[in-house]
Length: 169
Image (tube, rainbow, N blue to C red; front, side):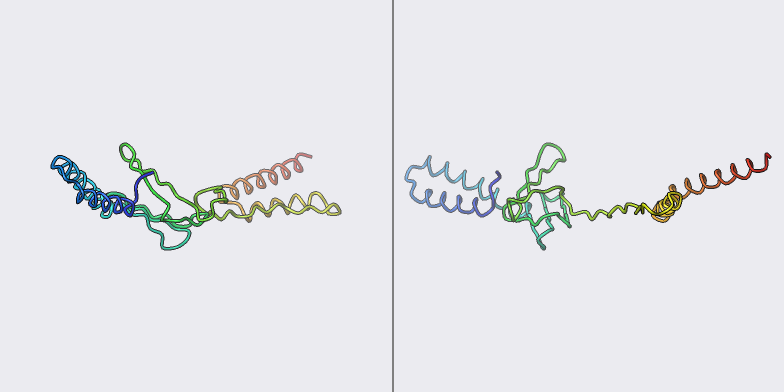
């Protein structure tokens, strides 16, 4: 797991304390170089990498200076303090989210409200042809343009077939 800015700051403080105790020049030079690297990493970490959350089910990631991702409507609440990300090869960024309640499972990342599918009601006492007409009417009312076009076409063809067969006598 990548190191957080607070952990790196604590490590730098401890390294500075060790630097003050060092007596040999080679050890002091080594610790100075390590301090420079860690301070540069801390500056970079503070400047570039940031995971924020302004609401329980939203997350914002600012990675490096080129990337910024804001995700709203997560299916569960996340703890931004325990979330982290890693820069993968190329343009890939791996974002690891930690839920507030760890025992919950995520069916999906985002909460998507699915429309409840209505099934037609059939009455045992009702005429089967009337039930079929009710079902077709419901399909027509709730269907998209393509569905409506198909139903109109089939109804028109059925009516034309019926009238032409009656005229044949």
